[in-house]
Image: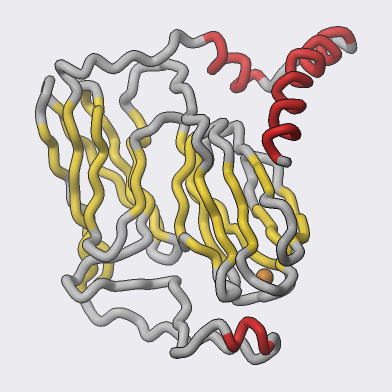
Length: 257
Ligand SMILES: [Cu+2]
């Protein structure tokens, strides 16, 4: 069971740390710096929210229908044609799958990650969700709901990259990313059309837009912030705002022509 493995890893961590000290090597400076920061504290009485909308102007590019025919089981999983999710423009003219986060402005602090894992599934030989937000140090539980072998390849640059096969009905994988990194692709070495993206945030103020093209960051302490939107094809946009104590701030981003 993963719990046991996870526990073992937790128990092993101090030993590894001691071992590292014994050999004279040190933990990564950024990791050590974060550990030394005071624990973040948000006063609910003054926390506010940041909301926004990601619009898309112009004609959305036509997305190719994915050809699953190299694997009959992948093909059978789709009753209707499945299009690539590189650009998903919603009927209301907004853009899906945009990762939005507070890029800058929070006071230096250590934000504890939730123990509840984020999930990435392989279902119908596609990754679900297409874009995933997760906190630094939060467990990522990876499922394979397909009757076929997949190969999960985290193509991270700041965090160590890894590439591991995941047979059908295998145990779920549990991973963690210990440094902020927005965004990096996750691909499958068996099925070239499979691609998702992960954004690792050092704090809990991030969101991914869905069918409404909107986002909400809740429980944000008052302050002046740089908010960044990141789309896999259309790239990065940022804007600044000031959130008053107990207030609501809005910031919209526009993509497309
Ligand atoms: Cu695959």
